[in-house]
Image 1 (spheres, rainbow, N blue to C red):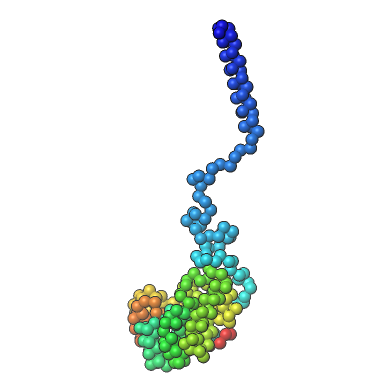
Image 2 (cartoon, rainbow, N blue to C red):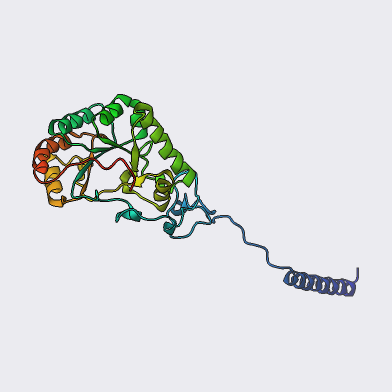
Length: 283
């Protein structure tokens, strides 16, 4: 082919390539941008800081550990009964002092506590765990037979119970009541104590629905930490006053310090206060 013809062909080819490139660029400019790839982006709910947080939950609401994320009721929908958290009861309402024992019954420690109370003629309140009541119905019967009052302390001592749905909380309370009444059919269960004192509006509302007084405390020697009898005694002496509700434990660990402290405290306290069980009726 003549050189002139080759040159003309090359020029035409370059021109056509330039026109095609310009047309392609113009077409890309008219197409909307596509969404970027999700590769490397943490999907909602996989960030460990929000692992249990429902996607529509308010920022101020703590993550719910259980299967339900139903919102708790408004705190203004029920009347408070006392001056504790969410209106929980912290005082006897009299000059008397109430000794309360949590987490039992326990086959080792509960009988020792009952023996001491009987020795000094003291009536107390036992906040019992449902599964322990089911395991040891004889101890529930002994508590009731000796004139002490019984309090619902949840089925399995679930500190996070208040984060569950209202129906779940109510079912837990009813199951525990059933276990107590199966052992002591004539017992009157007037109070509920939230494990760990982790009260929520949903728990207090469930109490109101079931006719249970939410029971807190105002004297806490932290005997559950087993600090020793002398420390338990000193803490109770420093905090105690008329109308006090004392938090103690007859289960959940080594309660030898609590038993030893009671041996020293009961005669002393009887000289200063009336020691009484909490009333077996709602206010």
